[in-house]
Amino acid sequence: MIKHHPSDALLAQYCNASLPASLSVAVAIHLEMCECCHAKVKRLEAQNAELIFAQPQSAIDEELSADAMSLLAAITENDDVDDVYEVQPQTVAITKQYSYQLPRALARIPHSKFMQLGKISRSRIGLEDGALRSSLLHIAAGGEIPEHTHTGFELTLLLDGEFSDEEGDYVAGDFMWLDGRHQHTPITKDGCLCYTVVSSALHFNKGLSKLLNPIGSLIY
Amino acid sequence: MVSQQPATRCEPNTGNYTAMPETPSKELADALSAVADKRDKQAFAYLFAYFSPKIKRFGIKQFNSDAQAMELVQETLTSVWRKAHLYNNDKGAATTWVYTVMRNASFDMLRKMKSNKEEHISEDIWPLVEQHANSDYEFSDHLETQQIKNYLDKLPQAQRDVVKGVYFQDMSQEQLAEQLNIPVGTVKSRLRLALQKLRNEMGDRHD
Ligand SMILES: [Zn+2]
Image (cartoon, rainbow over all chains, first blue to last red; front, top):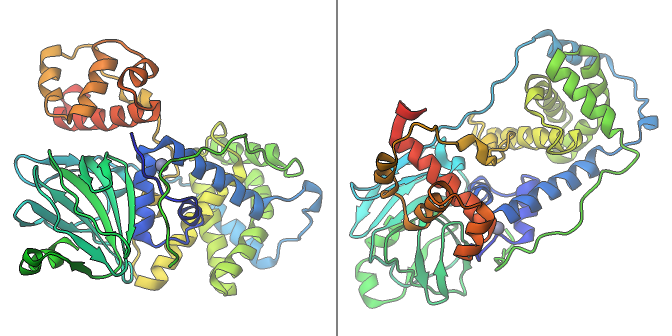
């Protein structure tokens, strides 16, 4: 069962498009898997619409300007309709052993080839988004991410499989927001695929991890 | 960017949200349907007159520019004209649907200004058509059970349990949720993921 959801503030920002693209994608993926947050978003959208568009019929008396009249004519001159935006399911194969179906929101957004180091593989999502970087992160069975802290924030959204850390177990759909105050060492028994968004460099804590520094630039 | 502490549970909002009574909800919904079904230009002119000044006001706040606000009016209402058939009035008010179209257009415009790329990812982030119905994923009768079991074995355990419960033990999604001690929503989403995967595995042969 999903135990970690986006905050209400984050859902509100998602609804009015004030959230950066890579985080909007994360919320969209969570909504595919979480009926409860999905219902919240539908409600927020109805409220936003009401704020912007509510008006009694009697108050509509604005005469259309000449510009508006010509725009109206230009739009209706063409009778074509747009097709439904069809998204074909996409599968990613990380190795022969691991292949996953991508969520709908990621199916059409390009991502790079997976780079691998030990049990960890990472593919960068092709989404320009200022200081934010988003990735697909795969950890093979028995793998872990070395202990680290963050100077900015890290969002981890579990897409498939499971992992656990000091705080507990996580399932597909869990939406985990960590900032500089957290330390964690996720470990996975059977392997997992995550979508991650990171705002700035990570610091690795353990001595051995420092030797493994390449992993920092690989993961995020 | 503000800190966003995660919520550890999803507290549903209670109560139904109803549109303010003075909004001509029915007229707007009817006009949208007339545009979809009959390409009714008069109905569209009504929608245009209702929405364009409000979209423009919203655009000026959003972009701080008259020209860009007009571009938003044009983008949004062109989409309303061309996509009206995607509006489903069982799912919500016409104003809500037009809001989502406008929000998406505004997002794509902002991305374009920042990155100078025409990428139009708003429909990846906010689908205009809901794909939540489970009825889309019915199996046809002629599937051999053995073959499907082979495919099932490739699914993660959690998804396999749900598919087996629903398709081999004929349990309702509610019964299954109770038995597995998970919410019905999770049963639905696992089923959806599993069936998408199965379809992919099986390719075209069983479409
Ligand atoms: Zn949720």
